[in-house]
Image 1 (spheres, chains in turn red, purple):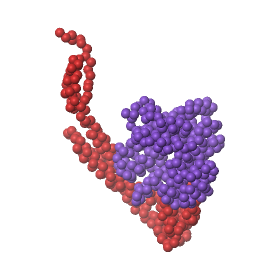
Image 2 (cartoon, chains in turn brown, cyan):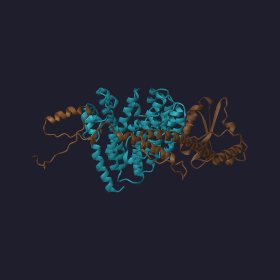
Image 3 (cartoon, chains in turn red, yellow):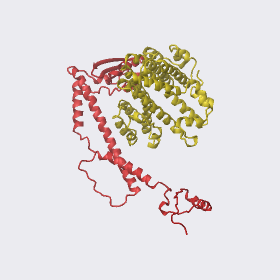
Image 4 (cartoon, helix red, strand yellow):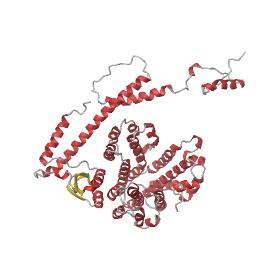
Length: 239
Length: 338
Protein backbone atom coordinates (compact mmCIF):
# COMPACT_ATOMS: atom_id res chain seq x y z
CA UNK A 1 0.00 0.00 0.00
CA UNK A 2 1.31 3.32 -0.88
CA UNK A 3 1.85 5.57 2.01
CA UNK A 4 -0.49 8.54 1.60
CA UNK A 5 2.08 10.83 3.07
CA UNK A 6 4.47 10.47 0.07
CA UNK A 7 5.46 13.99 -0.90
CA UNK A 8 5.38 14.84 -4.57
CA UNK A 9 7.12 17.68 -6.33
CA UNK A 10 4.93 19.14 -9.10
CA UNK A 11 6.84 20.22 -12.17
CA UNK A 12 5.44 21.81 -15.30
CA UNK A 13 7.25 21.08 -18.53
CA UNK A 14 6.48 23.10 -21.63
CA UNK A 15 7.41 21.91 -25.10
CA UNK A 16 6.27 22.04 -28.66
CA UNK A 17 3.09 19.95 -29.06
CA UNK A 18 4.64 17.65 -31.67
CA UNK A 19 7.50 16.70 -29.30
CA UNK A 20 5.23 15.94 -26.33
CA UNK A 21 4.68 12.24 -27.11
CA UNK A 22 8.39 11.47 -27.65
CA UNK A 23 9.38 13.42 -24.54
CA UNK A 24 6.75 11.59 -22.45
CA UNK A 25 8.20 8.21 -23.53
CA UNK A 26 11.74 9.30 -22.64
CA UNK A 27 10.61 10.58 -19.24
CA UNK A 28 8.58 7.43 -18.58
CA UNK A 29 11.75 5.36 -19.09
CA UNK A 30 13.20 7.03 -15.99
CA UNK A 31 10.44 5.40 -13.91
CA UNK A 32 10.61 8.35 -11.61
CA UNK A 33 8.13 10.69 -13.17
CA UNK A 34 4.35 10.45 -13.01
CA UNK A 35 2.93 12.27 -15.99
CA UNK A 36 -0.46 13.93 -15.74
CA UNK A 37 -1.95 15.59 -18.77
CA UNK A 38 -3.80 18.65 -17.62
CA UNK A 39 -6.55 19.98 -19.86
CA UNK A 40 -6.32 23.27 -18.05
CA UNK A 41 -2.96 24.06 -19.62
CA UNK A 42 -3.73 22.73 -23.09
CA UNK A 43 -2.82 25.10 -25.91
CA UNK A 44 -1.60 27.73 -23.49
CA UNK A 45 1.64 28.24 -25.33
CA UNK A 46 0.27 28.07 -28.85
CA UNK A 47 0.14 31.84 -28.81
CA UNK A 48 -0.58 34.65 -26.41
CA UNK A 49 -4.31 34.79 -27.07
CA UNK A 50 -4.93 37.95 -25.10
CA UNK A 51 -2.00 39.91 -26.48
CA UNK A 52 -3.44 40.99 -29.82
CA UNK A 53 -6.72 41.89 -28.19
CA UNK A 54 -4.99 43.85 -25.44
CA UNK A 55 -2.84 45.78 -27.92
CA UNK A 56 -5.78 46.62 -30.13
CA UNK A 57 -7.99 47.57 -27.23
CA UNK A 58 -5.31 49.92 -25.87
CA UNK A 59 -4.95 51.52 -29.28
CA UNK A 60 -8.74 51.97 -29.50
CA UNK A 61 -8.84 53.41 -26.00
CA UNK A 62 -6.04 55.92 -26.79
CA UNK A 63 -7.74 57.11 -29.94
CA UNK A 64 -11.11 57.34 -28.22
CA UNK A 65 -9.58 59.44 -25.42
CA UNK A 66 -8.21 61.86 -28.03
CA UNK A 67 -11.58 62.08 -29.79
CA UNK A 68 -13.52 62.43 -26.55
CA UNK A 69 -11.98 65.87 -25.94
CA UNK A 70 -14.11 67.09 -28.84
CA UNK A 71 -17.36 65.59 -27.58
CA UNK A 72 -19.86 67.78 -25.74
CA UNK A 73 -19.74 67.59 -21.96
CA UNK A 74 -23.16 65.95 -21.76
CA UNK A 75 -22.32 63.26 -24.35
CA UNK A 76 -23.17 59.73 -23.30
CA UNK A 77 -22.57 56.46 -25.08
CA UNK A 78 -25.87 55.07 -26.32
CA UNK A 79 -24.86 51.47 -26.68
CA UNK A 80 -23.99 49.28 -23.76
CA UNK A 81 -22.04 46.07 -24.08
CA UNK A 82 -24.40 43.12 -24.00
CA UNK A 83 -22.17 40.43 -25.40
CA UNK A 84 -18.53 39.39 -25.54
CA UNK A 85 -16.40 41.78 -27.55
CA UNK A 86 -14.56 40.04 -30.38
CA UNK A 87 -11.14 41.06 -31.66
CA UNK A 88 -12.71 41.84 -35.03
CA UNK A 89 -15.18 44.28 -33.46
CA UNK A 90 -12.37 46.06 -31.59
CA UNK A 91 -10.30 46.25 -34.79
CA UNK A 92 -13.20 47.78 -36.71
CA UNK A 93 -13.87 50.30 -33.95
CA UNK A 94 -10.16 51.20 -33.80
CA UNK A 95 -10.06 51.67 -37.57
CA UNK A 96 -13.15 53.90 -37.38
CA UNK A 97 -11.64 55.95 -34.56
CA UNK A 98 -8.44 56.35 -36.56
CA UNK A 99 -10.43 57.81 -39.48
CA UNK A 100 -12.33 60.18 -37.20
CA UNK A 101 -9.12 61.25 -35.46
CA UNK A 102 -7.40 61.84 -38.78
CA UNK A 103 -10.18 64.29 -39.77
CA UNK A 104 -10.09 65.97 -36.38
CA UNK A 105 -6.30 66.27 -36.49
CA UNK A 106 -6.46 67.98 -39.88
CA UNK A 107 -9.08 70.44 -38.62
CA UNK A 108 -7.02 71.03 -35.48
CA UNK A 109 -4.03 71.78 -37.70
CA UNK A 110 -6.05 74.28 -39.75
CA UNK A 111 -7.20 76.00 -36.56
CA UNK A 112 -3.62 76.14 -35.28
CA UNK A 113 -2.34 77.58 -38.56
CA UNK A 114 -5.15 80.17 -38.59
CA UNK A 115 -4.37 81.23 -35.03
CA UNK A 116 -0.68 81.53 -35.89
CA UNK A 117 -1.57 83.70 -38.90
CA UNK A 118 -3.75 85.93 -36.73
CA UNK A 119 -0.94 86.34 -34.21
CA UNK A 120 1.57 87.27 -36.92
CA UNK A 121 -0.82 89.78 -38.45
CA UNK A 122 -1.62 91.21 -35.04
CA UNK A 123 2.11 91.56 -34.37
CA UNK A 124 2.70 93.22 -37.73
CA UNK A 125 -0.28 95.55 -37.31
CA UNK A 126 0.97 96.54 -33.87
CA UNK A 127 4.46 97.31 -35.08
CA UNK A 128 3.30 99.19 -38.15
CA UNK A 129 0.90 101.40 -36.23
CA UNK A 130 3.68 103.97 -35.80
CA UNK A 131 3.73 104.36 -39.60
CA UNK A 132 -0.05 104.78 -39.75
CA UNK A 133 0.12 108.28 -41.19
CA UNK A 134 2.40 107.29 -44.05
CA UNK A 135 0.37 106.21 -47.02
CA UNK A 136 3.08 103.95 -48.48
CA UNK A 137 2.36 101.09 -50.85
CA UNK A 138 3.86 98.30 -48.76
CA UNK A 139 2.81 95.63 -51.23
CA UNK A 140 5.19 97.03 -53.84
CA UNK A 141 8.11 95.85 -51.77
CA UNK A 142 7.04 92.24 -51.95
CA UNK A 143 6.18 92.14 -55.63
CA UNK A 144 8.48 90.47 -58.14
CA UNK A 145 11.09 92.60 -59.77
CA UNK A 146 13.41 91.97 -62.69
CA UNK A 147 16.67 92.22 -60.72
CA UNK A 148 16.08 92.39 -57.01
CA UNK A 149 13.94 90.66 -54.42
CA UNK A 150 12.80 92.35 -51.23
CA UNK A 151 11.78 90.42 -48.13
CA UNK A 152 10.03 91.97 -45.14
CA UNK A 153 9.33 90.29 -41.86
CA UNK A 154 10.31 89.75 -38.27
CA UNK A 155 13.10 87.60 -36.82
CA UNK A 156 14.06 86.86 -33.21
CA UNK A 157 16.63 89.48 -32.10
CA UNK A 158 19.02 86.71 -31.05
CA UNK A 159 19.40 85.71 -34.73
CA UNK A 160 20.10 89.20 -36.08
CA UNK A 161 23.91 89.24 -35.95
CA UNK A 162 24.30 85.79 -37.50
CA UNK A 163 21.85 86.74 -40.28
CA UNK A 164 23.68 90.02 -40.97
CA UNK A 165 26.99 88.15 -41.39
CA UNK A 166 25.47 85.39 -43.50
CA UNK A 167 23.76 87.92 -45.78
CA UNK A 168 27.01 89.83 -46.20
CA UNK A 169 28.49 86.63 -47.68
CA UNK A 170 25.66 86.65 -50.22
CA UNK A 171 26.17 90.37 -50.90
CA UNK A 172 22.65 91.15 -49.78
CA UNK A 173 21.51 94.17 -47.79
CA UNK A 174 19.56 94.07 -44.55
CA UNK A 175 17.90 96.94 -42.73
CA UNK A 176 16.24 96.81 -39.33
CA UNK A 177 13.29 99.21 -39.53
CA UNK A 178 11.77 98.50 -36.15
CA UNK A 179 12.73 96.73 -32.93
CA UNK A 180 10.31 95.30 -30.39
CA UNK A 181 11.04 93.37 -27.18
CA UNK A 182 12.49 90.20 -28.66
CA UNK A 183 12.05 90.72 -32.38
CA UNK A 184 13.55 92.81 -35.14
CA UNK A 185 11.53 93.94 -38.13
CA UNK A 186 13.73 93.67 -41.17
CA UNK A 187 13.89 94.44 -44.85
CA UNK A 188 16.27 92.30 -46.89
CA UNK A 189 17.22 93.21 -50.44
CA UNK A 190 18.95 90.61 -52.57
CA UNK A 191 19.83 89.66 -56.12
CA UNK A 192 16.86 87.87 -57.73
CA UNK A 193 19.13 84.86 -58.48
CA UNK A 194 19.84 84.38 -54.80
CA UNK A 195 16.29 84.73 -53.53
CA UNK A 196 15.75 81.03 -52.77
CA UNK A 197 18.97 80.76 -50.82
CA UNK A 198 18.18 83.91 -48.85
CA UNK A 199 14.61 82.81 -48.21
CA UNK A 200 15.88 79.51 -46.80
CA UNK A 201 18.22 81.36 -44.44
CA UNK A 202 15.43 83.67 -43.32
CA UNK A 203 13.10 80.74 -42.76
CA UNK A 204 15.79 78.97 -40.72
CA UNK A 205 15.87 82.10 -38.58
CA UNK A 206 12.11 81.78 -38.02
CA UNK A 207 11.09 84.62 -40.32
CA UNK A 208 7.34 84.10 -39.98
CA UNK A 209 6.10 85.76 -43.13
CA UNK A 210 6.80 88.33 -45.74
CA UNK A 211 4.84 91.52 -45.41
CA UNK A 212 1.39 90.71 -46.86
CA UNK A 213 0.84 92.02 -50.33
CA UNK A 214 -1.80 94.56 -49.35
CA UNK A 215 -1.42 97.91 -50.97
CA UNK A 216 -1.37 100.51 -48.21
CA UNK A 217 -1.31 100.65 -44.47
CA UNK A 218 -5.05 101.32 -44.24
CA UNK A 219 -5.77 98.35 -46.49
CA UNK A 220 -3.38 96.18 -44.49
CA UNK A 221 -5.15 97.15 -41.31
CA UNK A 222 -8.59 96.64 -42.84
CA UNK A 223 -7.53 93.25 -44.16
CA UNK A 224 -6.16 92.26 -40.80
CA UNK A 225 -9.40 93.20 -39.04
CA UNK A 226 -11.52 91.45 -41.62
CA UNK A 227 -9.45 88.24 -41.42
CA UNK A 228 -9.49 88.41 -37.67
CA UNK A 229 -13.25 88.88 -37.43
CA UNK A 230 -13.87 86.07 -39.84
CA UNK A 231 -11.60 83.71 -37.93
CA UNK A 232 -12.89 84.70 -34.54
CA UNK A 233 -16.54 84.21 -35.48
CA UNK A 234 -15.83 80.64 -36.58
CA UNK A 235 -16.41 78.11 -33.83
CA UNK A 236 -13.11 76.50 -32.96
CA UNK A 237 -14.55 73.12 -32.29
CA UNK A 238 -16.83 72.81 -35.28
CA UNK A 239 -16.08 69.21 -36.13
CA UNK B 1 29.29 74.48 -4.27
CA UNK B 2 30.65 73.72 -0.81
CA UNK B 3 34.23 72.44 -0.33
CA UNK B 4 33.15 68.98 0.91
CA UNK B 5 31.15 68.42 -2.25
CA UNK B 6 34.11 69.52 -4.39
CA UNK B 7 36.35 66.92 -2.75
CA UNK B 8 33.67 64.25 -3.17
CA UNK B 9 33.27 65.01 -6.88
CA UNK B 10 37.03 65.20 -7.43
CA UNK B 11 37.53 61.78 -5.82
CA UNK B 12 34.64 60.26 -7.77
CA UNK B 13 35.94 61.78 -10.99
CA UNK B 14 39.44 60.42 -10.41
CA UNK B 15 38.06 56.90 -9.87
CA UNK B 16 35.86 57.09 -13.00
CA UNK B 17 38.62 58.72 -15.06
CA UNK B 18 40.93 55.78 -14.32
CA UNK B 19 38.39 53.44 -15.88
CA UNK B 20 38.22 55.34 -19.19
CA UNK B 21 39.73 53.69 -22.25
CA UNK B 22 42.74 55.81 -23.24
CA UNK B 23 43.71 56.34 -26.89
CA UNK B 24 46.71 54.02 -26.38
CA UNK B 25 44.32 51.13 -25.69
CA UNK B 26 42.13 51.46 -28.80
CA UNK B 27 44.05 48.73 -30.66
CA UNK B 28 43.75 46.35 -27.68
CA UNK B 29 39.99 46.97 -27.53
CA UNK B 30 39.65 46.20 -31.23
CA UNK B 31 41.63 42.97 -30.75
CA UNK B 32 39.54 41.86 -27.76
CA UNK B 33 37.06 39.07 -28.54
CA UNK B 34 33.38 39.88 -28.89
CA UNK B 35 32.30 37.85 -25.84
CA UNK B 36 34.60 39.70 -23.51
CA UNK B 37 33.60 43.09 -24.99
CA UNK B 38 29.94 42.28 -24.50
CA UNK B 39 30.59 41.24 -20.92
CA UNK B 40 32.35 44.57 -20.43
CA UNK B 41 29.23 46.53 -21.48
CA UNK B 42 26.52 44.31 -20.00
CA UNK B 43 27.88 42.89 -16.76
CA UNK B 44 27.85 39.26 -17.78
CA UNK B 45 25.63 38.68 -20.83
CA UNK B 46 27.14 36.34 -23.44
CA UNK B 47 27.31 37.06 -27.16
CA UNK B 48 24.58 34.45 -27.83
CA UNK B 49 22.00 36.22 -25.67
CA UNK B 50 23.00 39.73 -26.61
CA UNK B 51 21.07 42.04 -28.91
CA UNK B 52 23.68 44.13 -30.80
CA UNK B 53 20.99 46.74 -31.48
CA UNK B 54 20.88 47.58 -27.77
CA UNK B 55 24.65 48.14 -27.34
CA UNK B 56 24.54 51.90 -27.60
CA UNK B 57 21.48 52.13 -25.40
CA UNK B 58 23.13 50.01 -22.68
CA UNK B 59 26.33 52.04 -22.80
CA UNK B 60 24.46 55.34 -22.61
CA UNK B 61 22.33 54.09 -19.69
CA UNK B 62 25.50 53.19 -17.77
CA UNK B 63 27.04 56.59 -18.54
CA UNK B 64 23.87 58.41 -17.49
CA UNK B 65 23.80 56.58 -14.17
CA UNK B 66 27.35 57.81 -13.48
CA UNK B 67 26.49 61.35 -14.60
CA UNK B 68 23.45 61.36 -12.35
CA UNK B 69 25.62 60.43 -9.36
CA UNK B 70 28.22 63.09 -10.24
CA UNK B 71 25.66 65.86 -10.81
CA UNK B 72 23.85 65.32 -7.51
CA UNK B 73 25.80 67.85 -5.36
CA UNK B 74 25.40 70.66 -7.94
CA UNK B 75 22.63 73.20 -8.05
CA UNK B 76 21.71 76.51 -9.71
CA UNK B 77 23.50 77.52 -12.91
CA UNK B 78 26.06 74.70 -12.64
CA UNK B 79 23.34 72.05 -12.48
CA UNK B 80 21.45 73.77 -15.34
CA UNK B 81 24.60 73.63 -17.50
CA UNK B 82 25.32 69.96 -16.72
CA UNK B 83 21.74 68.81 -17.27
CA UNK B 84 21.58 70.72 -20.54
CA UNK B 85 24.89 69.18 -21.70
CA UNK B 86 23.52 65.67 -21.19
CA UNK B 87 20.50 66.49 -23.35
CA UNK B 88 22.82 65.94 -26.30
CA UNK B 89 21.64 62.32 -26.05
CA UNK B 90 18.01 63.37 -26.19
CA UNK B 91 18.57 65.08 -29.53
CA UNK B 92 19.07 61.68 -31.12
CA UNK B 93 15.65 60.64 -29.76
CA UNK B 94 14.14 63.82 -31.13
CA UNK B 95 15.69 63.27 -34.56
CA UNK B 96 14.65 59.59 -34.62
CA UNK B 97 11.06 60.52 -33.74
CA UNK B 98 10.77 63.27 -36.34
CA UNK B 99 12.48 61.22 -39.05
CA UNK B 100 10.37 58.16 -38.24
CA UNK B 101 7.04 59.97 -38.20
CA UNK B 102 7.81 62.00 -41.34
CA UNK B 103 8.80 58.90 -43.30
CA UNK B 104 5.90 56.79 -42.01
CA UNK B 105 8.01 54.22 -40.09
CA UNK B 106 6.15 51.91 -37.70
CA UNK B 107 6.07 52.82 -34.01
CA UNK B 108 7.96 49.58 -33.26
CA UNK B 109 10.79 50.57 -35.64
CA UNK B 110 11.00 54.09 -34.21
CA UNK B 111 11.00 52.70 -30.67
CA UNK B 112 14.05 50.55 -31.44
CA UNK B 113 16.07 53.70 -32.11
CA UNK B 114 15.05 55.50 -28.93
CA UNK B 115 17.35 55.66 -25.93
CA UNK B 116 15.94 55.59 -22.42
CA UNK B 117 17.44 58.62 -20.69
CA UNK B 118 15.72 57.81 -17.41
CA UNK B 119 15.77 60.87 -15.14
CA UNK B 120 17.25 63.08 -17.89
CA UNK B 121 14.31 62.48 -20.22
CA UNK B 122 12.39 65.62 -21.12
CA UNK B 123 10.48 64.29 -24.09
CA UNK B 124 7.21 62.42 -23.45
CA UNK B 125 8.36 59.59 -25.73
CA UNK B 126 5.30 57.33 -25.37
CA UNK B 127 2.87 60.17 -26.05
CA UNK B 128 4.87 61.33 -29.06
CA UNK B 129 5.09 57.78 -30.39
CA UNK B 130 1.33 57.38 -30.11
CA UNK B 131 0.73 60.41 -32.34
CA UNK B 132 -1.19 59.23 -35.39
CA UNK B 133 0.26 61.76 -37.82
CA UNK B 134 3.22 64.20 -38.04
CA UNK B 135 0.96 67.23 -37.49
CA UNK B 136 -0.25 65.80 -34.20
CA UNK B 137 3.33 65.00 -33.16
CA UNK B 138 4.43 68.58 -33.88
CA UNK B 139 1.55 70.00 -31.84
CA UNK B 140 2.66 67.75 -28.97
CA UNK B 141 6.30 68.81 -29.44
CA UNK B 142 5.22 72.43 -29.00
CA UNK B 143 4.53 71.60 -25.36
CA UNK B 144 8.09 70.35 -24.73
CA UNK B 145 11.41 72.21 -24.21
CA UNK B 146 12.06 71.58 -27.91
CA UNK B 147 9.21 73.80 -29.10
CA UNK B 148 11.62 76.20 -30.82
CA UNK B 149 12.39 73.73 -33.60
CA UNK B 150 8.74 73.01 -34.39
CA UNK B 151 8.30 75.90 -36.82
CA UNK B 152 11.10 74.67 -39.01
CA UNK B 153 9.99 71.06 -38.66
CA UNK B 154 6.58 72.11 -40.02
CA UNK B 155 8.09 73.93 -42.96
CA UNK B 156 10.24 70.94 -43.81
CA UNK B 157 7.29 68.58 -43.52
CA UNK B 158 5.16 70.66 -45.87
CA UNK B 159 8.01 71.36 -48.31
CA UNK B 160 8.72 69.03 -51.17
CA UNK B 161 11.49 66.50 -50.66
CA UNK B 162 11.44 66.84 -46.86
CA UNK B 163 14.98 68.03 -46.33
CA UNK B 164 15.52 66.40 -42.94
CA UNK B 165 19.20 67.28 -42.95
CA UNK B 166 18.29 70.98 -42.52
CA UNK B 167 16.23 70.07 -39.49
CA UNK B 168 19.08 68.05 -37.96
CA UNK B 169 21.36 71.07 -38.49
CA UNK B 170 18.87 73.38 -36.76
CA UNK B 171 18.48 71.00 -33.81
CA UNK B 172 22.27 70.79 -33.32
CA UNK B 173 22.68 74.54 -33.73
CA UNK B 174 20.00 75.30 -31.13
CA UNK B 175 21.62 72.85 -28.71
CA UNK B 176 25.09 74.39 -28.88
CA UNK B 177 23.73 77.94 -28.77
CA UNK B 178 21.80 76.97 -25.63
CA UNK B 179 24.86 75.32 -24.09
CA UNK B 180 27.02 78.35 -24.84
CA UNK B 181 24.44 80.62 -23.15
CA UNK B 182 24.59 78.45 -20.05
CA UNK B 183 28.40 78.69 -19.92
CA UNK B 184 27.99 82.47 -19.65
CA UNK B 185 26.01 82.12 -16.41
CA UNK B 186 28.84 80.27 -14.60
CA UNK B 187 31.33 81.84 -12.18
CA UNK B 188 34.25 83.72 -13.72
CA UNK B 189 36.91 81.02 -13.19
CA UNK B 190 34.65 78.19 -14.31
CA UNK B 191 33.61 80.25 -17.34
CA UNK B 192 37.23 80.76 -18.44
CA UNK B 193 38.31 77.15 -17.92
CA UNK B 194 35.17 75.63 -19.34
CA UNK B 195 35.05 78.21 -22.15
CA UNK B 196 38.42 76.98 -23.47
CA UNK B 197 37.31 73.34 -23.58
CA UNK B 198 33.89 74.23 -24.99
CA UNK B 199 35.61 76.38 -27.63
CA UNK B 200 37.78 73.45 -28.68
CA UNK B 201 34.66 71.31 -29.01
CA UNK B 202 33.00 73.97 -31.16
CA UNK B 203 36.09 74.18 -33.40
CA UNK B 204 35.71 70.46 -34.05
CA UNK B 205 32.01 70.70 -34.92
CA UNK B 206 32.30 73.90 -36.94
CA UNK B 207 35.09 72.48 -39.15
CA UNK B 208 33.18 69.26 -39.76
CA UNK B 209 29.86 71.03 -40.39
CA UNK B 210 31.44 73.54 -42.71
CA UNK B 211 33.09 70.79 -44.80
CA UNK B 212 29.86 68.80 -44.85
CA UNK B 213 27.61 71.77 -45.73
CA UNK B 214 29.88 73.19 -48.41
CA UNK B 215 31.34 70.08 -50.06
CA UNK B 216 28.93 67.22 -49.27
CA UNK B 217 25.59 69.05 -49.46
CA UNK B 218 26.72 71.84 -51.80
CA UNK B 219 25.17 74.67 -49.75
CA UNK B 220 26.05 78.30 -50.48
CA UNK B 221 28.66 80.09 -48.33
CA UNK B 222 25.89 82.22 -46.75
CA UNK B 223 23.66 79.28 -45.81
CA UNK B 224 26.64 77.18 -44.62
CA UNK B 225 27.86 79.97 -42.38
CA UNK B 226 24.38 80.67 -41.03
CA UNK B 227 23.94 77.03 -39.99
CA UNK B 228 27.16 77.01 -37.97
CA UNK B 229 26.81 77.26 -34.26
CA UNK B 230 28.46 79.48 -31.72
CA UNK B 231 32.11 80.34 -32.44
CA UNK B 232 35.02 78.30 -31.07
CA UNK B 233 38.44 78.76 -29.53
CA UNK B 234 40.54 79.04 -32.69
CA UNK B 235 37.80 79.65 -35.21
CA UNK B 236 36.07 82.97 -34.64
CA UNK B 237 33.41 84.66 -36.72
CA UNK B 238 35.86 86.24 -39.18
CA UNK B 239 37.71 82.93 -39.78
CA UNK B 240 34.48 81.07 -40.32
CA UNK B 241 33.12 83.65 -42.77
CA UNK B 242 36.37 83.52 -44.75
CA UNK B 243 36.46 79.71 -44.71
CA UNK B 244 32.83 79.48 -45.84
CA UNK B 245 33.75 81.22 -49.10
CA UNK B 246 36.48 78.73 -50.08
CA UNK B 247 35.87 76.31 -52.91
CA UNK B 248 37.78 73.15 -51.89
CA UNK B 249 38.63 71.09 -48.78
CA UNK B 250 42.36 71.65 -49.49
CA UNK B 251 41.94 75.43 -49.51
CA UNK B 252 39.87 75.27 -46.36
CA UNK B 253 42.46 73.19 -44.48
CA UNK B 254 45.32 75.44 -45.68
CA UNK B 255 43.50 78.51 -44.37
CA UNK B 256 42.86 77.05 -40.91
CA UNK B 257 44.67 78.68 -37.99
CA UNK B 258 47.52 76.79 -36.30
CA UNK B 259 47.61 74.01 -35.08
CA UNK B 260 44.50 72.89 -36.98
CA UNK B 261 46.12 73.41 -40.40
CA UNK B 262 49.01 71.07 -39.50
CA UNK B 263 46.77 68.50 -37.88
CA UNK B 264 44.56 68.20 -40.93
CA UNK B 265 47.20 68.76 -43.63
CA UNK B 266 46.55 66.65 -46.76
CA UNK B 267 43.42 65.03 -45.34
CA UNK B 268 40.58 64.57 -47.79
CA UNK B 269 38.43 61.92 -46.13
CA UNK B 270 35.71 63.24 -43.87
CA UNK B 271 36.02 60.17 -41.60
CA UNK B 272 39.74 60.81 -41.09
CA UNK B 273 39.13 64.52 -40.45
CA UNK B 274 36.42 63.57 -37.97
CA UNK B 275 38.75 61.13 -36.17
CA UNK B 276 41.62 63.62 -36.00
CA UNK B 277 39.35 66.35 -34.64
CA UNK B 278 37.85 63.96 -32.10
CA UNK B 279 41.35 63.01 -30.92
CA UNK B 280 42.20 66.75 -30.73
CA UNK B 281 39.18 67.42 -28.47
CA UNK B 282 39.85 64.29 -26.40
CA UNK B 283 43.43 65.39 -25.70
CA UNK B 284 42.18 68.76 -24.56
CA UNK B 285 39.50 67.07 -22.41
CA UNK B 286 42.06 64.64 -20.88
CA UNK B 287 44.27 67.58 -19.89
CA UNK B 288 41.32 69.43 -18.39
CA UNK B 289 40.23 66.31 -16.50
CA UNK B 290 43.71 65.92 -15.01
CA UNK B 291 44.77 69.49 -14.33
CA UNK B 292 41.85 71.95 -14.37
CA UNK B 293 41.18 73.67 -11.01
CA UNK B 294 37.53 74.05 -12.02
CA UNK B 295 35.44 71.04 -10.94
CA UNK B 296 32.69 71.73 -13.46
CA UNK B 297 35.29 71.87 -16.26
CA UNK B 298 36.70 68.51 -15.16
CA UNK B 299 33.18 67.10 -15.10
CA UNK B 300 32.41 68.42 -18.59
CA UNK B 301 35.71 66.93 -19.79
CA UNK B 302 34.65 63.58 -18.32
CA UNK B 303 31.27 63.78 -20.11
CA UNK B 304 33.07 64.36 -23.44
CA UNK B 305 35.51 61.48 -22.89
CA UNK B 306 32.79 59.12 -21.75
CA UNK B 307 30.68 59.99 -24.83
CA UNK B 308 33.71 59.26 -27.00
CA UNK B 309 34.15 55.90 -25.23
CA UNK B 310 30.48 55.02 -25.81
CA UNK B 311 30.92 55.68 -29.53
CA UNK B 312 34.14 53.65 -29.63
CA UNK B 313 32.71 50.58 -27.89
CA UNK B 314 29.52 50.78 -29.94
CA UNK B 315 31.49 50.91 -33.21
CA UNK B 316 33.83 48.07 -32.21
CA UNK B 317 31.03 45.74 -31.02
CA UNK B 318 28.94 46.51 -34.10
CA UNK B 319 31.94 45.96 -36.39
CA UNK B 320 32.84 42.67 -34.70
CA UNK B 321 29.22 41.43 -34.77
CA UNK B 322 29.26 42.02 -38.53
CA UNK B 323 32.64 40.21 -38.81
CA UNK B 324 34.44 43.27 -40.15
CA UNK B 325 38.21 43.20 -40.47
CA UNK B 326 39.97 44.46 -37.32
CA UNK B 327 42.12 46.89 -39.30
CA UNK B 328 38.98 48.40 -40.83
CA UNK B 329 37.38 48.79 -37.39
CA UNK B 330 40.56 50.42 -36.10
CA UNK B 331 40.54 52.92 -38.96
CA UNK B 332 36.84 53.69 -38.55
CA UNK B 333 37.23 54.31 -34.82
CA UNK B 334 40.29 56.50 -35.21
CA UNK B 335 42.60 53.99 -33.56
CA UNK B 336 45.16 54.57 -36.31
CA UNK B 337 45.28 58.33 -35.72
CA UNK B 338 48.49 59.46 -34.06
